[in-house]
Amino acid sequence: MDHFLYKNGVLHAEDVPVADIAAAVGTPFYVYSTATLLRHFRLFDEALDGMDHLVCYAMKAASNQAILKTLGDAGAGMDVVSGGEYRRARAAGIPGDRIVFSGVGKTADEIRTALAGGIRQFNVESEPEMEVLSAVALSMGKVAPITIRVNPDVDAKTHAKIATGKSENKFGIPIARARAVYAHAASLAGLEVIGIDVHIGSQLTDLAPFEAAYQKVADLTEQLRADGHNIRRLDLGGGLGIPYERTNAAPPLPTDYGAMVKRTLGHLNCEIEIEPGRLIAGNAGLMVSKVIYVKSGEGRDFLILDGAMNDLIRPAMYDAYHDIIPVIEPAPGTEQQPYDIVGPVCESGDTFAKQRMMPPLAADDLVAFRSAGAYGAVMSSEYNSRPLIPEVLVKGDQFAVIRRRPSYEEMINRDTIPEWV
Ligand code: LLP
Image 1 (cartoon, rainbow, N blue to C red):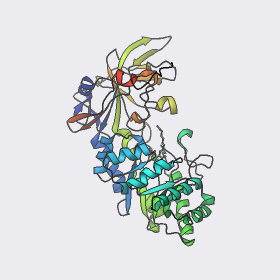
Image 2 (cartoon, helix red, strand yellow):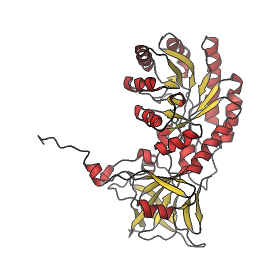
Image 3 (tube, rainbow, N blue to C red):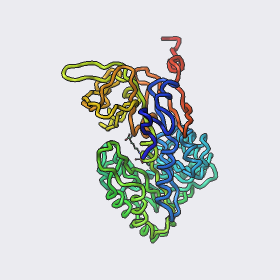
Image 4 (spheres, helix red, strand yellow):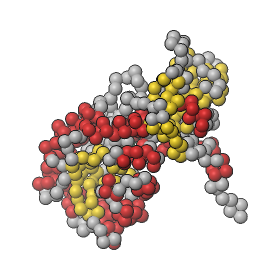
């Protein structure tokens, strides 16, 4: 459920007409709903009620500080994967003891930053990383709390580019080697082993792969405890999918997920962390764009928008489906027609949808891409020298620009031409 509905014939973000935002900030832009963000966070939080837990929002999904503060004030922790994300989370007021640091390639500098600023735990992904982390911690007179990410070799049955839990993926250590790696970690004076981490992929629409992975984590917890490790925290990663196509059967809800977590792991009395990103932010955001031209091609009509693949890369990169709806609600009974919906970027991959049924649209009409809140703005680029598009946050009847559109000068003036050129 989200808070983007037609009211009086105009698409609203909560109580704000989307067309009013377009008039104020220009197009294209991203807009997020505070109510939807909080609703999704609370669904997860409540799903784990009765277990000691922390929902660490995977901020890679949408990392504007206004979003982080909204979630942080509601009690969320953060899952960060870079020194930049760590700094951003701290700048948004998230305390270090609510930040977990994931990722296969943490540098010594990034580790130092997090240890100096305060961190809940590092999710370590390899033995070389363990060695570096221990050495950096010791050099600072600290001990780093860690979980070790295990790769359970489970097929997440999602798009190949976002599956992470198979043995051929670069993530985690093979679960078969876990006991040896934990023994190694325990021998390093700069580390304190506190738990196990697992994340098998993103946009999972079935609980079975999660359950298979968590069952392996449960077994491993008992083995490691028998080996003498004080395993007291389990980080279960993110990955629960969202309905991109409203016509499809909806994926399981956080409540179902929470019940499964309790069933498979509840008896271990561990503190539980989860790292949802997409489910919190995905349906909490729209990308709004304007039709520049309607062009008649050979046997097809193109809607050429002012938004492009550099603004929302998911269709080009993952063949992702996004609902695209007109901002002005079509009159009941309006006949639909097929369009190829494209951006102005100079490659054919800049196609959002082919032969998509839409009501008839004309130049200057506004359309909204639904489910664009996660992995939208954060994956945008300036390809074709198109400035990054603004982000807007709505709360009730108020809205604010939370990242403004840079001027052309700002974008261009970042380059320097050496005198010898
Ligand atoms: N934790 C870890 C360690 C992760 O790598 C990820 C996502 C998450 C949590 C959050 O997963 P989520 O709950 O959002 O599924 N750009 C792609 C998705 C990449 C996901 C990367 N890792 C897309 O647009 O579909």
